[in-house]
Length: 240
Image 1 (tube, rainbow, N blue to C red):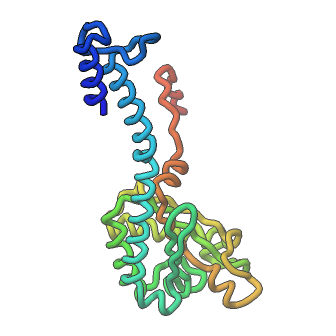
Image 2 (cartoon, rainbow, N blue to C red):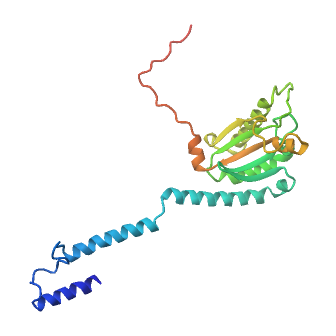
Image 3 (cartoon, rainbow, N blue to C red):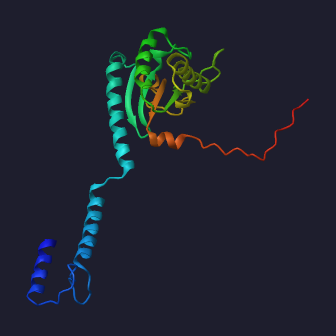
């Protein structure tokens, strides 16, 4: 269309309607602007508008890709832990933080103990082999029911929940070569139940260790920022 308009204006010049000048012919005699310049400006405006429509923010594309990968990971874990899921020893679900793998204590721990049952090590091996090839950060959470515990090994539910999460972190690092910076351990005792503690079934669901596979956004929000070292600080004198 631009070439056609230019050809028409050139033809009128040759007929003597317009004085001859250059091929950059003004489109508006009151506000002269060479045609090629006007066309360039219009193209820039159109391309900018199309860019706003067609281009998606990089962050949203990365988030969508991660959600797809988490869905794939969930399918892989569901297949690998199919037997344990059928026995209700393992449960998978999504939360805002990421993908959660719940290990019920009756399938993985003896009552009141933080030691992993030997029979459950095979399931942990399958779980770890899938998580090892990815780079997601993992938050290991210990949970209990609201029945107080007091034994020679565990003084409270806090001790039990923390000991179990820490033991699982140790197994992933020592037994499966997980990078320690990928892992964190937390003990919540009875204060984050997923079911009612008024029933036997509910209490059994609350006694668990959750492996929270953190999305990148959640992981970044939970990484503590370390203060810059103070180069002017002097070392404390050694006590005699």
